[in-house]
Length: 125
Image (cartoon, rainbow, N blue to C red; front, top):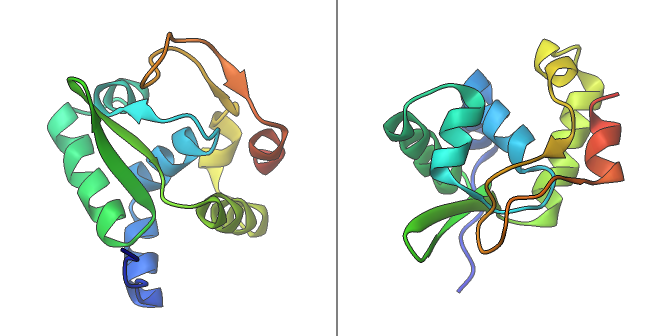
């Protein structure tokens, strides 16, 4: 079943919150991450991340799946990564400078290991 597309206004509102943008940056590597790991990475309570993930999910930007005991978040579609990267290239957003492009540690459905994608890394330049 295909989700209805979000309005431009809805997408803008979802992206306007710095912590939601940080969640998207963490997911740019293409590796699904547990909600708890996202909370630790961006320095907020798990309940706060859950609320942000719900908003990002409503906007069609992320998917959240239950995998065992973990709720794992991932970008909804490769076009989300492309759009976020394009917005970051057009922006002088300081959040980009603090994002390394590396997703290390807890992963959903596997052992924690660092992965870097060249596309995601180029977004931080």
